[in-house]
Length: 96
Image (tube, rainbow, N blue to C red; front, side):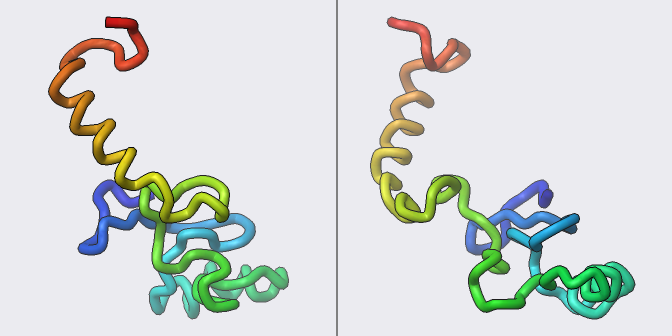
């Protein structure tokens, strides 16, 4: 998994043993030795089937069921800001 997000705030996985979820479709991921092995096994490659396997990576607030993708970002941001001010160095689940 990438250590830091890209310029769009998205993270990527570097390889997969099955479906290539969140794997960036680079030249090596689509045409390298590992890609040939995946292709011979009948597995999809990064970038196949459009956005089905999220080749654009993932945005942490969007992780979860597809029905909730893009929802709750305002709540997420407000909660993060509140926790950074109120609960510095303490458990966020403890009752104040």
